[in-house]
Image (cartoon, rainbow, N blue to C red):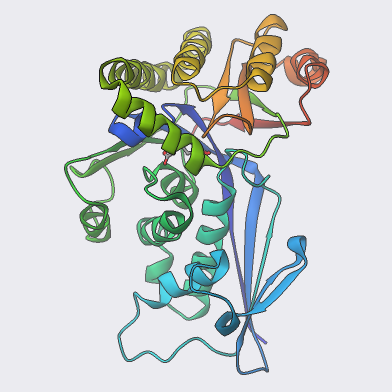
Length: 341
Ligand code: PMV
């Protein structure tokens, strides 16, 4: 019985969460230590069974609404097939994930991306498992649950590389991705997308506040505040955008001191935007005091995760990790952004 598996990593945002929604640049990098995995197997039953064993869920595709997260990924792929294609059948799709849910690590996007990739390969459509296509389809799934996401999450988990992402507000999303699909994958005018790499390994700790914080609510709140005080908020957004630009240069140059300082500055701006929280601030401060080169919240904020840039020797000594745990982190993950070989 044939079976196809695909994986997609988690992600952290190094610079530019929230401001990216307003057209400012942002940087996200994959976190390969946590992954979503999808396996598609031929089945003897006629239907499509969607299994999420981590959640104890088994559902027939036709019993769940089209906006069910796993069904939405199946239908997003199916809609790209020729109009006379029969509905999917005789498949068992199983999805597992080690990416914490609703905590800014891109779990929803990674699950959709893994499922779309595995299913595309399984039905012999390797062309639809290309990063640009997976990213577009994952964006469609993300829209159902997040309203109007910027597109950075689906991009980084689909390309599985560090991305410098600038949304072009003048163009609609379908146009963006039509251009992606036409093969102009990088530096396209509608959503400028550069992949890049670091000069030397960059080590990060990811501290989880343990507080689940839906991104959609934080993004909605920021929008309301921006509408009430556009001048101040546009200043904050522009400040974050500038940090993302400088951050890309610092990553490329391997300048860890500069990178850390820029992360600290980004956290201060995110506080002004009101997306931090006392728990996040406590973890950021603890990391800074314990010798991290820089620290900030990462993702939607209000809870979820923060990140700290640390020296390599931290991995043996564990001083910053211990400080994060002492300050209330529920879990501390470690990731390294390795230079491209
Ligand atoms: O999914 P999260 O929590 O990592 O947040 C994504 C980043 C935001 O800028 C807050 C939202 C977006 O659509 O870009």
